[in-house]
Structures are given as structure tokens and as C-alpha cells.
Image (cartoon, rainbow, N blue to C red; front, side):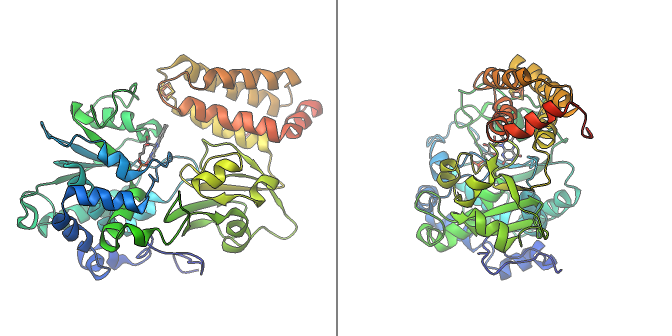
Length: 430
Ligand SMILES: Cc1cc2nc3c(=O)[nH]c(=O)nc-3n(C[C@H](O)[C@H](O)[C@H](O)COP(=O)(O)O)c2cc1C
Ligand code: SF4
């Protein structure tokens, strides 16, 4: 199958150009109207750019879905020193693989989005914090930044406008926690990637102690299109509160896993059975994690009526997060899946907060015990109580993220736990 497979229901805005090596070059990007948005932004001025982004209703694609225009407007209007924009390209949430594709196929789309964002928040410097394991993406991106400098689109006095913006690609070192925005800034400053207590928020005290905005790769990639075509144009897709398109990273037991750019509000049912081709013969849906490892698991019934926008998924009992849809068929051992996710969080905990450091380890030990056939029904109550103590008690939400799948799976798939407990023997702990 040619890369990428594009389904007829997709609306390709940020994914347009994927699979075409020429799009990686500045000339190739210009053939797709590249840098027209940035030139327009220079003419519009910062306040008008923020208004247009507000009008579009774009919400951050890094997980929380916070309105981007509003976030930009939190930056100080009066400059008393440098401002920074950090692009969060540290993508490591289990089940998420959209930013890597944006980085490696359309690096100029991101550079253009960063330049517009920097203009809007009066940033002197953009730091693109890119996951170190993305070797190809890092190389492609570094080349794109060089090309932008050579074309006078980055650096001092851009296109004679008097605006100066520097762009640096910074490689991360593979810690999941460095995707959390305050840890990212600590790491960027050359310190350990430890999350910081908020407030102060980054717009007041961010990287190097200066006002900073952190945005996800996909968020910034949508910006050139919004500025070029207008905020209203973007609203033709999606819902009133979740406008535009979104990349859905679908993995698991479907026939055609992959990245799909679809309007927000797209029915989950249609995504699984039509866009992704459903399941192997004789298999049926058991559960879906709709937004990466950090969100509650949905049962098959909950999935059927679920619409994939921020409000729709919440109504169904979970969160859209970064739209990493992990689909599981009826072969799935839910306890094993949850245990593997919890072990991921235990491994990635930075260790600053006791409920997270100890809690993630205890969750994984108890889950392993249940999986190994040595659990008791009391363990389920212990898991739930532990989860409660891990929620809203720590510096960042990694701790909550580990507790969420445990609690939701016990609530919705209690029989799976009980079957292992009552069977009393191991089922291949891997
Ligand atoms: C543990 C943890 C890991 C995160 N990892 C990422 C990540 O890899 N990429 C990302 O964009 N946001 C990540 N986030 C969210 C960021 O903190 C931040 O909210 C986001 O980059 C803001 O961008 P947006 O407003 O464009 O969504 C993570 C958050 C947490 C708590
Ligand atoms: S919640 Fe966990 S990952 Fe987050 S700061 Fe505390 S110990 Fe570190």
C-alpha cells in the first residue's frame, strides 16, 4: 500500500504533503502555498493574528485541548525582555505517532507555524524541543530551519519587516516526562527534566525565567492554514466547541491502523469499522482507549455512541487527549494491557512526588500479582484506594494518568479481574 493510505473521508489540511519527499524542501512547501500565511501575519500584526486564531477556535493538540488564541493572549503585551516560544515535539505518549509524521514530512509547515506563533507572542526565539529518538525528524527539521534562515524567513529583520526571530532545534534525551511543559523548560535550560509547581505559569515565568508559551507540533502546524485562509474557514469542519480537523492515531486490532486526519466530532464507530476497516473475521470490539494511555478506557457500548471531539468523548466517559485511539478486540486481556501502561508510568515517573513514585510502583506490583494468579478481591479495593491517593496530589498529572486506566478498567471490566483472581493461575505475564 502506498504511503500514506488516505481514506476518502479524510480532510487533509496538516497531513497534506505527507509521503512526498519534495514537501520537505522550502520550494516544495512553497508550491503548497507555504510561507504565504507567515507573510500575511507580518502584514496583519500580532494582535490581529491572535484574534484570527481565537476566531478559528483552534484548541491545543498536545492533550489538554486548551484554546490556542487564548493561551497566546496570556503573554505580556508590554515587553520587558525576551519572550520564548517552545514547540513541544517530544511526542512519547503510548499510542501517539502523529507529530513524528508532521516533523518528518512537513518540517516547513511547523517552522512556518512557529514563526507565526512567535510573531503573535513577540517571541525572540523559538525552541523546537524534539524527541531525541526521532533521528530522521531531527535531521529533516534542522535542514528546514537552515533553509528558512537562508531564505530570510528566520533570523534578524525578517523580509525587511524589522521583526527578528531565531529558531533552534533542541534534541531531547528520551524521557517521557520532558513532554510535560514545565519539565521541558527545565530540560531546555540544561537541568534535570523535572516538572515545576504551577503557578507561576509559563506565560509569566517560563524558560530561562522569561514569559514563554508552549505549543504542540500539531497545534502549530494548523496555524499557517488558519492565518492564510481565516479563522472562519477552519470552522467549516468540526463542531462549535471543537472546530477543525484532528489527526487520529489509530492502533491495535483494526485492519488498517494509522494516522487519519478527520473533522472533529467524527463518530468513533465509523472510524473503527469504515476508515480503519474493522476487525479480523470473527472478532468483535471489546474496548477502546480514545486519547493515549492517560485517559479512561471505554467499553464497546460506550464506543458505539461516542463522537470524537473534546466534549463528545467526555460525554462518553473519557477524554480525547491527543486522539491516540487504541482499539482492542475480544481477545484482549484488559488486566495485562492496563498493567503494561502502569509499568510505563512507573518507569517514567520523575520521582519527585511520593504518591506518584510509590503509587505507580505499587499499582504495577499488585496488577502483576493479579495477572500471575495470586491476587485477591481485596486487591481491587486496594488498587482503587491507591488511585484516589494518587489523584490531584502531585506536581504534574502523570500520577493521575497512571491511576485513571486502573480505576476505569476495574469499573468497566471487573469480570476480567475476577476471572484471573478466581482462576488462581498465571496467564503469561510478559
Ligand atoms: C506527563 C506529560 C507528558 C506530556 N507529553 C507531551 C508531549 O509529548 N507532547 C505535547 O505536545 N504535549 C505533552 N504534554 C502536554 C504539555 O504539557 C502541554 O500541555 C502541551 O504541549 C501544550 O500544547 P498545546 O496547547 O498546543 O496542546 C504532556 C503532559 C504531561 C503531563
Ligand atoms: S507526578 Fe510523578 S512525574 Fe509528575 S512531578 Fe510528581 S513524581 Fe514527577
